[in-house]
Image (tube, rainbow, N blue to C red; front, side, top):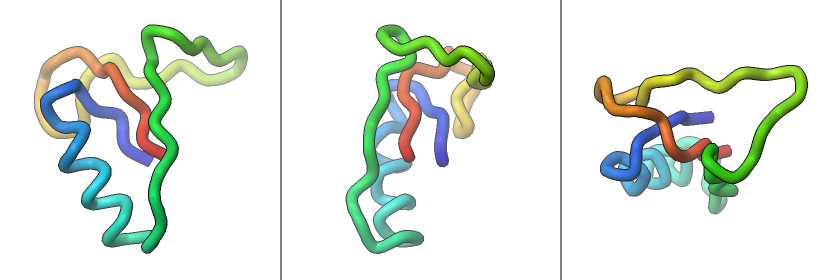
Length: 55
C-alpha cells in the first residue's frame, strides 16, 4: 500500500506492479473517507499532501 501525491502516483503504481505482479486499485483520498482508518497526511515520497491510496 502506498499513499502518494499526484506527482508520485506513477512511481507507486510501478512499485506495486513490481512487488505484487498485478494492477493496483487507486483510491482518491479527496473522494473517499474511512471510518476506522485515517490515511497519512503526507506523500510517502515527499512532503506534499497525500492524494491517492495505491492498493
